[in-house]
Image 1 (cartoon, rainbow, N blue to C red):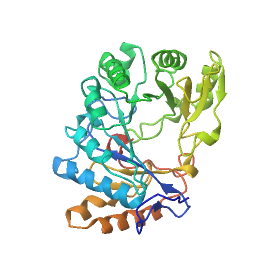
Image 2 (cartoon, rainbow, N blue to C red):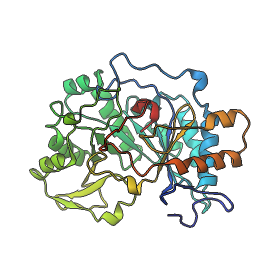
Image 3 (cartoon, one colour):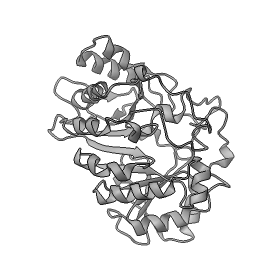
Image 4 (cartoon, one colour):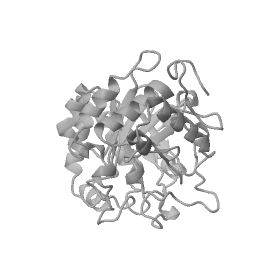
Length: 349
């Protein structure tokens, strides 16, 4: 529900018809990626957006400004595709962190990345004001990582993670998707490694967001299976659910560790334990389409309005009105579910 300080006086909030308020904006900066993860896209890649259709740096900042100053957005996460492929990333981050919400505070900023090239840019991103990073990593075995991503780049990822930690982009979160028969034996090794390195590991259930008709539900490693594997090696204590809020991850303290420290592990059970009732997210694609849900089959063209000369008030009003179409949930387990037309790389994480 609404709370004080969501937006400037006279402005609105991104509230849907179920009373949920979106305060977390995911901004895709490109649909392009330098990996070809088997569960995400085909080996040959996908047809990329023409450059003219992609928001310019100034257009990205303008829409983020509307979201923060007029619509109560508190957190902005930059995603892709792979956002490190965006040349203007640092300037976009700096412009975003210079914004102020109604209570005078800047929005929280983060980046979801595969970490290729992060070792060269972590310090610059920190200097631009970026708060933290989430890094996708599905295996610590070099040959297996290469098979999953179709690129032999694991050393670069590990270097990027270390650089992010050293630059203070913390907590550094590592997101892992386990796929049956591929890397489902790595839950325990990954957690041991993350604890030793000071990273926060989160396992994410595989979702139907890759190439159409390519998702096999039987390949998904369920949250209860992941927790079963971890409990065989660690003592897991549930962290008070009140700390979770709208965070999609359920969290466990590991071996009596401080839940406010790094000795924790998270599981995002998007499929088997959906958290749609507490969702506080809204998405902006690289070509300026507003999406109220990762699995939405409709979009609102904010880019078209912006380029046609709409002012900030008009953009905010259209954005707020579009939130009223948001459904109660993603419906993955329901009969007749259809995945969105766009793949994950084009939607943004």
